[in-house]
Image (cartoon, rainbow, N blue to C red):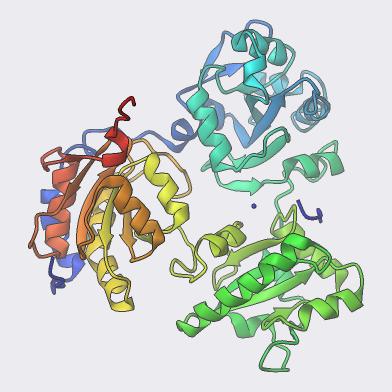
Length: 495
């Protein structure tokens, strides 16, 4: 494993299911008139270009994904140090090997009418754009001898979205393998897997399900746990689980562990079935014991090194600290549990699944600059959070119903409406000041920072499932009176 490496509140008593027909009739036609693109086009654009000396041929993205079993998204960087060039040459050899064993293997497979095992989509980026005189020429020179496809050189927005979605680190070559049928991630550690298996004997290196490793022996209590009894995985079948990869020698780990303990306890106090399982990268059993003495959760025994390594491979862990959140069936909810804890220390959005309605935290607030949102401001009591979810969720579900091809894992800001509950906190205060909202609660708003406008439900209107739906429809059909966002339209007068 890699070492350390960032109005009046009132509920509508009619069940949401009874409102479906009425809500469908009320829904605006804006998104209904928009043809939904398949996931391939939303992710990669309508066309890709074939690498080679000319870089002229354009291929429909859907055709590309239908012609292979696995898509490899290869992010590489052009820089003076050429740090990605060595792996690019290695990937060419692997590409040819898994597609037929020769330099013409990929083309031979296509000519024979067979699906390629692997198609690579190159996302070429520049570490120092300001130093490049002609980006198009640089792009052509870099892909002239490559056998695969690429995102067009000038599709900067697409490249930006892809790097954000897959959290690509600048200057670091990254290979992410996807199922060509639906875009599901097979492995994020393609570079490491390719270097360890240069001919692709075990390609596509799909990791085993974590459940098998978790079941392989008892889970022992840590020193800070209120029980000394070991547990079997079967006893956690109703729990959400956080698998925590960490080590006593790692400074970021030692800084994060107390934060995780605090969030863990808050989540459990709120009544959630949540357990954490510690997986050590310590270098000695003594260090391991010192570290686990303060932890209130479970651990995999230090002596079971093979089990720990298998679990790291199963969850594609590349660095520590890493916190992976699993659902009760041991399916991965998120690989970014550490980020979720840091941005939501109270665990208000636990278990951090892809949800239609979220609590507005600092993490989500940054997304408001990319897409509009329906935001209900409340004081923050549990009952108000529950109320907010009850009135916003039907409208959010109806919005997604209008977009049946929506991929919850794809961060696409185009025509995407977000739904949030904003509590009485610093994040909400900053947003109110930015937009120009008063301190009233409850307050239903539509905030569109990209357009620089916002709308507010009329004063005194009752917030119900129906009135929220009408408000959302009015916003989507441009029938709500809007105001200019204060900070967006603020002009600085010369002195």
